[in-house]
Length: 256
Length: 236
Image (tube, rainbow over all chains, first blue to last red; front, side, top):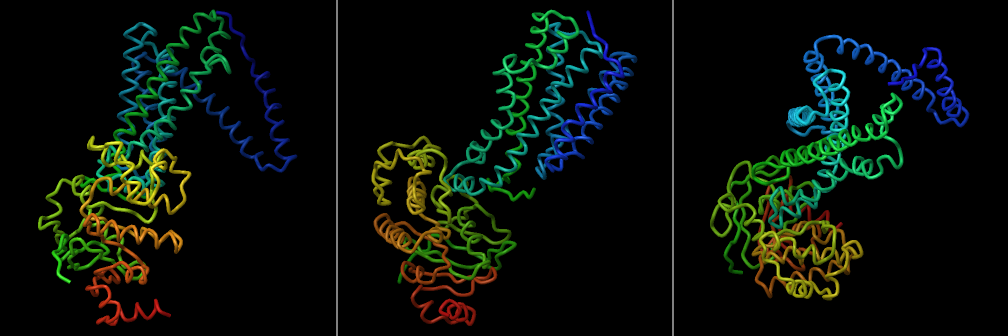
């Protein structure tokens, strides 16, 4: 595999590119200079730290590295996605279980079909993609679910008063929440390769893998992510809409 | 005025309402009046179990309302809200919502329901977003009537409408009540409206039922100082 090594010096020169938006922000009084500098600095430091962490994880026995880092990823994703659920009861536990189940299932599928081997350098990056995308989808679904139950309270009460069950009265909200969660992935999958080459495929091609082999990997990844996102969004909305009602089929008041 | 009661509350209380004892007469229009924050809307939502009593019992046709399956009770005791809260789609989509939940929708019903609320049958294919406020409220009324309720609860159902539209809806309600023998319970802050269409009235203040009786007698000769004060404030 031919790889081009990026020297520390050439990496430092990238700072020049950051100076451009900072200068433009200053020039047009946009007030974004601080955010651009801070997020760029934070991103660089985080990536270097992750580089060291991954180097360590790849140096210990595979099962230990995988167990340790996948657990960390699932926990961080759970905390991050659950925040969008505000005061929804049991949100953290439900989100944790859904992400954990999806991760284990996808991993079992990949290993079962022989797409990857059970080594830390394969399992950890690919798990990160699945868990990260699931986290985003669950966060979007929860945010929409919560805001819709607030905005559409009147319509839900109207539906209940017409004899609808909580499930029937929430159908429109569940649909909207699912759409909000899945649209980024649906649009991404529809235009994959046409608008931009996916990051992993680009990485493989830059690393010297033939485009056709890179495409095969990308298909496995993209479809796995799409299916995971769809299942996560469906599970989280179908489980958690119930928490907005009590056992007497009455709508509860949940403050954000 | 001799009547049987269709709904009766005994010693009912919630976080907002205290020691409620009242009866709703069958096939009449009962209005619930009182100042803002009196608990009028909370009370009406108890009657179809959109909210629950903490203590006490409400009886519907002599039976505890908690003994009815809640969806069945809500079909029998329908409700129209201050806003129409129409669902996305056409007028017909809204009219069929309740009956479709039981697979009982017949598309011929759309014409009858629209006729009942004085809207032309051509309206059934119109998107609800194209309707005026008054038309939306009529569709909301027709949507509730599609379930053929015995009792119709109206929570400030005309308060967002202009004077003319309010009077048209009032006439509609009176006609429907007389033709179909429906019991109506209407929350209103409008005393003139209560006088125009109410047979019986309940006066509520700070979560307590202060006085009740035949509307005209109650509003012409109040016996409590609370209601007298309320009427004086309204007149002033």
